[in-house]
Length: 261
Image (cartoon, rainbow, N blue to C red; front, side, top):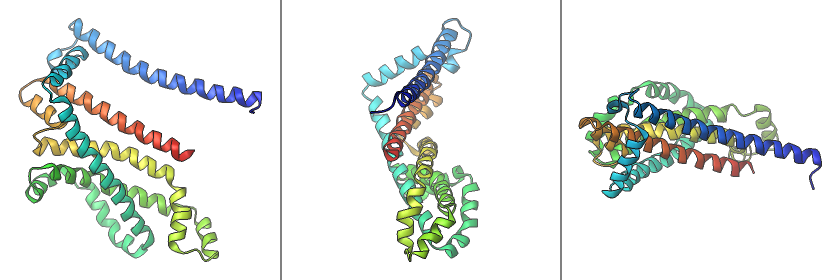
């Protein structure tokens, strides 16, 4: 049994978490309320900014046309595939660079140059090489996210306490033992943070790719809506992206809590 002081402390933590969640939801509902209020009283131009009510009606219309979940699934599939490849591939490459210092020093300037390169400029080349397909969208997302993943993970690995590494080496630990017993466990939080950053970058890459080549997906809805001046459709696409990104973010947070336990 916990002591009375410890129980009070745990209760205080739970109350604090509740108020954090409550405030987060309150901010969302307040924004939606003010947005709809401004639209109802002609304080904003609803042709440009739309309104929550119009967005809900658009979502209902897409659902009735049986296209809503089709577009969501296309984008969700592209995001998940890109996220898994970028995260796992980035960690593997970063591990290789951590293990082989010579390769790391050779590759380092090229990573910096590629990271600073505007990825949109590669769009025509990607389309020519991969075709106007889902493959091109995934490649675009990978170009945007994988280099950042490599740089951040490598930096985290190389920042591990050198004294601990020397201690393991003094016990004749091999490189793979150092990696799995020290480097990887010491950087769980850093890897989770990389995943959180990757979600945003992957969505940027996927939507950019859908703008260029897609005939389905949330990015396609936004592009099509802008072409026909249907701003309700554009705002609906943006809201759907926010919801999808939030769901994936909280999924990563859930995994983070499980790892901490």
